[in-house]
Length: 593
Image (cartoon, rainbow, N blue to C red; front, side, top):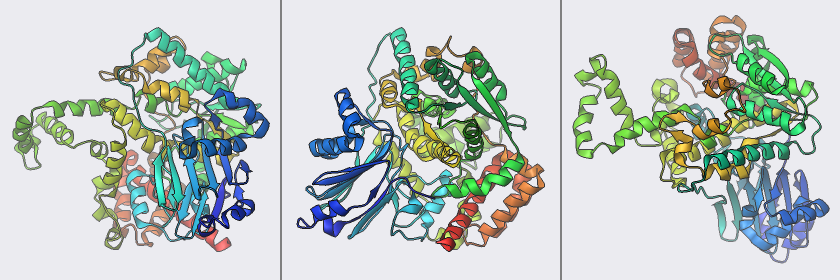
């Protein structure tokens, strides 16, 4: 796979005042746009712009990279405060004797890097960082099995790191410093009339769509039939003044198909609507390619239907797709937000009373065997777990027991508590008083930057398309952070403001529907389709020979667990299969290098 941005800097030369300027002249940087002057060089990918409108003419005349260098000389490491949009940037400065790397608020564009005493190398792909070792990090593999992706800053490769969303890296004489360039500050006291907020909200979405289609003749929209994708499809029709192309994926499996809602939205807005029903044969044909496209193991099963959706758009002549990602995470739309509010009520119970209640809810308590009271004791057991660990109370790997899933030799190389430490550090980054805002900020990292955005990015890259996320524009994000808390989660009603602000714009049936998206019925199909089941079995048995997963667990998972509960255990089969398929891709790549 080719990288979009890359570079390798000899730090010893950069930190030598007599040689640094020569380094700038000879430095090879790769990106969408590069620039250099006497003291510095930079490269950038994505679609960034400057917040200051006064720079627009200068950018048109000189190019964004040249203006970025100028701003760097003026603002230094605070330069990101003057940028907006999706970007990954790298700046090498001989005068300041430093290298500066940064990614946007949500890591829509990514940067991975390797740094030692002599060299700093970077790329948007972990598997393309120059000079990096092919040695895999066992902890990263464990993190993958826990989260179904590998959260930044760790990557699958030892010695290669990935910049977390809204972060920068500064390498200078003082060492290596990670900097969060966008603080998580929610305004929990801001109040304004609903009507004014509604009008501003709709305009911001429309502006976000307008910004994303600049320079493209035919732009399409992912359309699942949910509120987010339907809103984007509708705004695309409105902004272009014509029937915009919209693409939907369906599944011939009970409980998974939402095509009726996609059709409803398409008819309501007058979209050029195209549909495709993904089949088990599609999975069989595309699983290896989808797994191996990513720069490290990636277990979000929606990646495959998203790819087929993007493929359909590419065949229809689109050069870019608009995705609705971000609506849930900015405005409070995930069901766990209401669930955790319910659990959080327990924390208001006096500590003295909780000390009396909790022993009655232990595993050995007789109350656990009485119908009705079992649910009450379950509520207490989950509620007493502090956030954010409570969000992973039903983690699939931990429910199955790592000791029963993974080999003893593999477990000896990992820290089982590392995911919890990572979550605690992420949770602590946001100091908002309200539970809902802290959960939103938490999800910006795990759900958006590390899972959903890589899914859509990978799918569109494979289809040869660009992608934009109008609901993640900086202006709309800032707007969401100033909304009252109870406009996001009103009692137990999810994203109250978002839905009320779009009432009359979206069909009521879409506003009131439950969310599903492009969920994949893999487990169900794997029990019914012999060829798909064979691929899964063969992949898992091969993985068991690598010393990561216990062979007896693989046997039990395939022969007993999967047939009994395909929807639940199908997820574990999927992430193990995708890990094996990714590992095979890496082996083939090394063999061909």
